[in-house]
Picture (cartoon, rainbow, N blue to C red):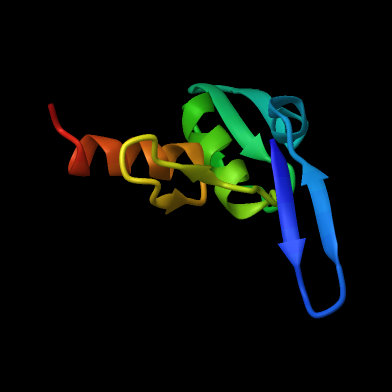
Length: 90
C-alpha cells in the first residue's frame, strides 16, 4: 500500500505491507492459551485479527482506502469494512 504524506514542502510515499504489520506482532504461549502482543505498546489480545487491526490503525502510516461505492476515505481496512457494512447494505 502507498502512503502519501504532504506537508508545506514535500510529499513522501511510504509503503506499508502486511509483512511490516505482522513484524510488530508477537505470539505468546501462556497458561491459559495463546496471546498476541503488540511489540510497540504491549497491547495484548487472544485474537490475531484484532491485533492486526490494532497495529494497522495505531502504529503504521497508511494511505487508507476509498470506498468503491461512494469514494469515502477510510483510514484502515477495518474502517472500510465497517463503513461498507453500515452504509451500503444490499
